[in-house]
Length: 329
Image 1 (cartoon, rainbow, N blue to C red):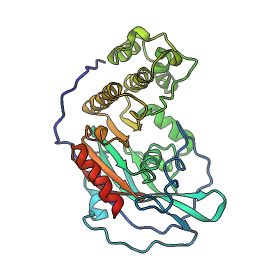
Image 2: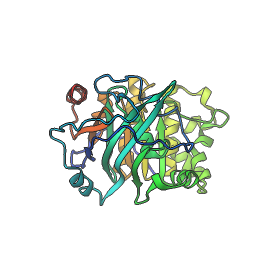
Image 3: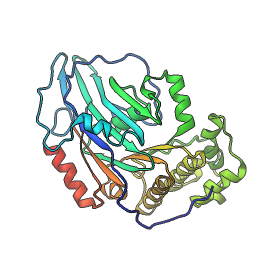
């Protein structure tokens, strides 16, 4: 497997995710089943901080139902569900996540509000939105790292949201890769050992040549025997990218992958994500950085726990305008 460091722009022919939304009541029951998490704590970190601010999911009392609100310009949900679903690597239908509010038994936070979306195979989608809009919650629920309260997630034709946790973890190990802001490298392992770990866990151990090729692709072959504390932040993130490349997943979820990096390192990471998509991997990236979002094939804008709109726009200023407009609704 060979990877090339490329900086050329890709065309706009990729199809963006089909998105729609449906207003739901906030009194849905939450499941008590414990959920596995990879990386930082999900849910409360991306929701609830904004409370009932415009554009953020509000704290709603139990039994309260949101009134139906007009959705100007939104697609018909059934039409959105039909279009693009046939070649979608990831599909979500009426995805809803409700969190209990600590110390308030009479209130919950509606973090996701009946989201429908299709992410085509080989697409690179950036999910953007104001803090508290639910974008990281959406990614974690799609990836099976958090348990949705209601709705359905399908990846590669399998209803992953209906799997038992152990089976879902096995599915992720076989088909899904992750890139997070915190790198998630094992401190006691070398860069090479970190790259090989996911494939070993999936029962598909890598050869030394495969490990070397992945590290060489990100310019770290000569640092293969160093441990994470001996690497810079940018280098650690490149190890995380090499780990994804080596395992050849069909889907990659990236949550703020450039959040802790300098401009040059961010460019390298984003270029590799684009390369993965060009080779058929479906990449879904959550980011606050509109410049990073502009490098994706399509942009989905979150607001108030809903996918408000999507666009093939590649202009950072226009993307920022879409985020502002969605929050102001």
